[in-house]
Length: 378
Image 1 (cartoon, rainbow, N blue to C red):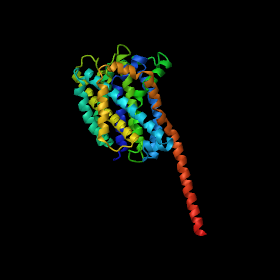
Image 2: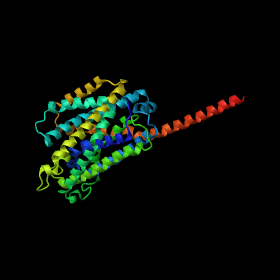
Image 3: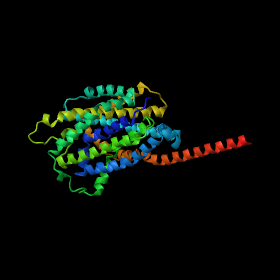
């Protein structure tokens, strides 16, 4: 498989970090913590920054090592298979939740008669094909749209500021740190996009500033998301938020300006592209994890199986967006959100072990040369 560049990886991580966080997440967090949604996002991103730093450092130092190789060296083959299957399940759940979010977004912001067949079958076929072509194809598609997407974000935030009241964000942590901490832990599952970096291991071309380029994309997404959450809170406060779509509704209450001039249609259409690219990225992550778990080669039937499973679960009539949210905030998902960080945080230990192994290998090589030289002299 052809490797991607650091710039492409940075763009894809930027879109992955933004995407679904601009849909119903601001409303969902606000329902739990009130006006401190941006504080929750900040804390969650701080928790993300630590593993991202160690993964990028590892990626820079060992660009040819993929996740499976690293885990097998550190934990053994059996435990490696269990860990990768766990991540396959994690990515699959994220994929199903995103599928629900996109459908909800289309109904709320675009057309209220979007059926599952009308939406999901074409998406699975197109995104499945892009996924089958490989990570490079997803990255190239992301690069085509990145400038338009950034412009859409600037437009949404700028227009949102016109009806924002910054006092709505104050006082900070009015309900106490405990409420904010609880909200952060409950939303870790949705904030934890650093685990996508694990799939990038061994798939990025080595270059001097590789870690900085990818880190810049991630850092930019974090800053923009926090700014968006502040503006969203400043517009809506914490009253009657319901299930609002952040990116589509942030400019809704600007007086004397039509929807056309507010560019609601523009941000809505562009954000459909963003979430579909995230959909394809998650599908790729599930696909790679399954291939690695069972020792398979590039296989279209695995992708078909993933697509069928997503479709069958998504169309369950009783599994609406409200029930999905209730399941999502349950204790098992909270635990899962914490557990998925174990491996990313462990990369700090992996770096130490790999460094020791390298020193040992270097020392053995020097000793071998000395012995060889001594034998020649004899």
